[in-house]
Length: 94
Image (cartoon, rainbow, N blue to C red; front, side, top):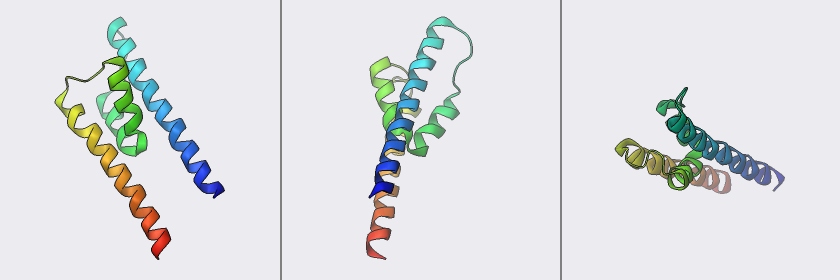
């Protein structure tokens, strides 16, 4: 049970990081300068950070007009949820 708490805490912290990345990238887009590469945002999204990226898109109104973000961020969330469900099913029914 403790392991589940650690994993959940880690996921929440990671999604706070990905949310912050979207805010940072939006700030840099307004001010100019170095930006977070889209590939990195997608990678973080597919590595269980999709909810943070999606929330960042909504809150900061950032990347919302990019079709790639409209498709790939929800897909990353779906695949991450499917992966978690598969692991839970495997652990429970092996």
